[in-house]
Structures are given as structure tokens and as C-alpha cells.
Image 1 (cartoon, rainbow, N blue to C red):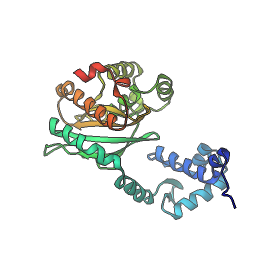
Image 2: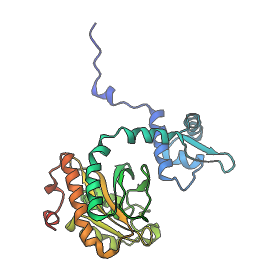
Image 3: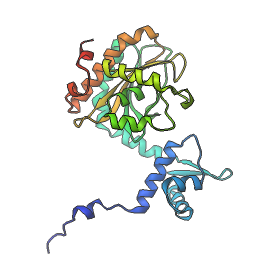
Image 4: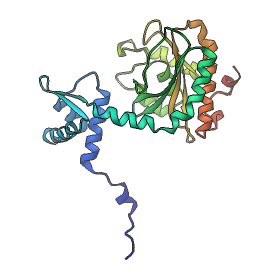
Length: 272
């Protein structure tokens, strides 16, 4: 008997309930501080309350979602932490970037991070502490919104214009922390500066007294995979010195991922 061949259409088919469960988890990840109710979740995913309730109950059974019985709100459950740890433990990418982070921290004395872009979040999967007794503590697995601070500017600066415009059209943007502080004129100038220099910066906007420099990391297709971040309480006067080092680190990692960096970075930045 011949093996049954799957057509492209069959192979591409999705299970609706699984897709809806995934959309629920993604929505809860985005709204981690909002504590949405059942109706909010179902409206976002586009399903009836009864269907959403059944999916949420199933996710709750496996610890992937938690329900607050009094407020009747939902949030991500602790079961996801297990999966997150397993993913991070098994990532070859982390092993690949660590030598680069070690070199960067050795050059600057500051804490260097690698953030992996996933959906609309940047997950810290690797870090190298600086040599200061007092510094910034960011744990492996910590997540930032993709538009937050220096890494947000770095990421959007290398995106195609259409993709960048789509992101910048959203109601909530976290480039300067609280969305109410968003300044489109200032951001436009900072994006142009990041495109020219190969790195973006945050001068205490996310957290007073903490500065950051970041550059995007690209894969062989020229898509953003993540970013290198150098963060600390270092003075703003150090940013022009640290920025090119961060940019060079991101380019080295991009090379290992197979990207010809000359196509995505200003070549002048390499000479700074």
C-alpha cells in the first residue's frame, strides 16, 4: 500500500480550537497588566463566550491560565514558566551569543543582554553581568514590549517602511515608557539617527538613572530576530563610546546567523 501523500492544502490546515487557544494566550501575554475578563478575551479572539470559557477552563487545567475567582479576570498561569525555561535551556542561540556578550561587557564594564523577538515581546535569553557592585538586575526570561526604549527604536529602525508604519500606527507605544509620553516627532528623529549610526539609545526614559544602547540582530533573510542591549547606570557621555561597540556586537551575531550585514546596517557605523 502506498503511503498517503498530504497535499499542501491539507498540510496547511489548522485546528480551530488550538488556534483560538493560541490567540488567547497571546492576548493574555499582551494584556499582562490589564487582567481581562471573559468577554474581553472572547471579543478580541472573535469567539462566543461559551467557546472561550471552555478553552480557558482547559488551559487552566494544565496551569497555562489562571482565573481570579473574585474579580473574574484571567492571566497567564505558572505552567508557562516551565515551557519557557525548557525553551531557553535548549536554545543554541543562547550559546552562540554568549561569547559576544562576554566581550562586550569586558570592553565596557556594563551588563549586556540579548533579547529574542517573539510576536510583540522581546525575551531576554542571555546576559553577561558587568563588573559593578551596583547595577541593573534583569533576569533571564524577562520580557519587554517590542517598542520599549532603546531596543524598540533599534528594532523599528531596521524594519521595512511599511512594517514600521504599521507598528507606529498603534495606539499604545512604549518607546518612552508610559504611552502618554509618546512623542512622534522626537521618535522620527531618533529612528533616523539609529539608522545612520547603527544603534539606538534610551537616556533614562524607561527608568530614571538607567541608560541603554541597543542594536538589532538580523537573520539570513534580513528579518529582525532580536537585539543586543547594553544597560546600566553609566553616564550619558559614555553612549557615543558604547554605541559602536553594541552595533559591532549585533553585526557579528548577525553574521553568524548568515546575514550580509552590509545590506542592513549603515557601513559608516562599522568604522565608528
